Image: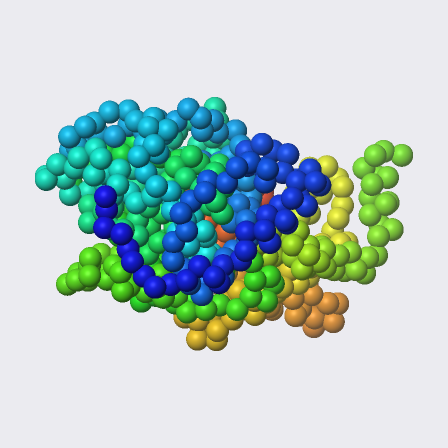
Length: 309
Length: 207
């Protein structure tokens, strides 16, 4: 098992589940939840183990988290994923795990999930576009899966790939970036206890627009590093190519750690704005490593994070 | 009576004032949508985008008046000035949303204008529109004289080009929509080139 991140934070500040659930019931009554891509409130929760992550963080609502998404496989508008991601078949789902591992192969999602304990992790999410959210993810540490397949000593990086299904993903018919979507992490980043594979949020199965059925969440990096709907995990020796970095390397670095000191060439990263604050929402200062510096800054000791942005 | 004549007669009945009054409706509509959650959970960006795109659309309409007249005989010339002023109004609102609601901090605003090429381009377009907006009245037309006035108002061509480039530059990834706008605008600008004697366009004497 991976080393568990311990903290003395408290669960008590979180929006009680019945508060948002009640809101969803009202919507379901109005027919708004009829799409079927999202499990209805009657569906059994995932019963994820509560953890102490995210004390003092105010959660974004289910509606905010599931209606404002960057998932360009379904279109570039923030509302496109909610509109069209329902077309993606997420069951059955297999992940091809290969490269420098002892037990490569095609792993069914149920097989992957049968050995893990799902936990609720409340994390900040910071998009490179300057908006931010707080999301109660459900998942397990990526390290658990990597340990299970046996990472060979020569492996230095983990490469991920999103599904590419033109018949189910209308956005990939246009080359916004080079498909399939690819991401990567350094092995120590991937093994870090904060890095999870998420299969749900708000104790519900992952909505398609948020990367169903399984996605990475790396909370100290810009959102695009947290790759969605993963079908391939490869352990490699060299730094793997990643989608946005290939598109524009000076704008999107391999590391992409949240860093107010390193501006995106087209906009400043000094401030961010929380989604859901309405027309007069204030900007707030961006925190280095998205506020997870205590846990992850040591991974980059001695590195110039402006050069290695 | 031909269709064109009928259309032109109808256009003749529309006072420019009606255009100004109607022009207020879309921003009010957007603002109401933003306030009531109908523009999504991040209404600031949405409002900014809606106003910018609307400005580009009216800009294209303004630019299209001449070629539409040339090819179809339908004549919107009487309303063109109103279209131009409305464009300025929308660009101004777009800028205002960016300044007040989006960026918020003065030091950030200035840093963005200087350091971010797409914002520099957008601000450039806005700056070029100011003399056009200020002289969009009969008194200015009389004072400048029609030749000088017309030459000044050729600033519209760089404005519209900068507007399209601004949209292309701010998009993340390779997206279709901004290039559609750029293509339409380039096509409309191409109709303005006098292929026979294009050198004369800018070099013509003032009198």
